[in-house]
Image (cartoon, rainbow, N blue to C red):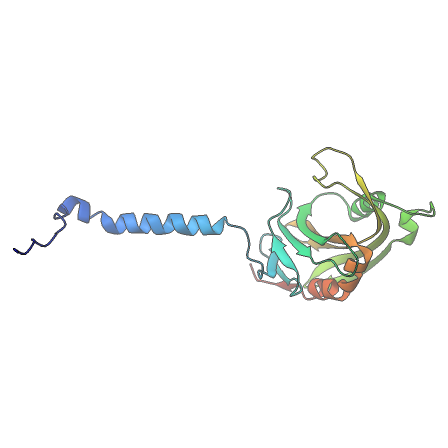
Length: 207
């Protein structure tokens, strides 16, 4: 039996071969861009606020997820504990309005089983962290949840025995940033120390 001739690729014209490096660079750039827009990995604990000026690290058991709303920059899901059926949710975003106006708005999202004013049961604390004034807020009660977001319409869902922890970070050049963590009281209660450690551990990145 005669040997079959070896298969050979036809020669690549010089004009085409000269373009190959550029084509490979373009392909690599496209792949990199696709990864940049992918969902964050579950272990992506570190995040920044104020255009990257300050860095924080979430607790190890919190899972970073794709934000539900376009106005939210960073979002984490917090595992429920005990008999809680809902996970906790932490969102990070920049927004306008005074400190007092935002706290009043959050209080308006809660009602009290005994009919008392939520503002009377809300605690606040001011700290100085990484050169920023930070206001910590702690609210409990029945939460008027908007599952689709505040601008999606639909009816609010009353969630009894809920709690919200928030930190309002006043930055010099990028305005105010809001780190808000809410969910069933037991789930939030288990992560109080982790939330405060995250906020109090904020550092300036030098950007």
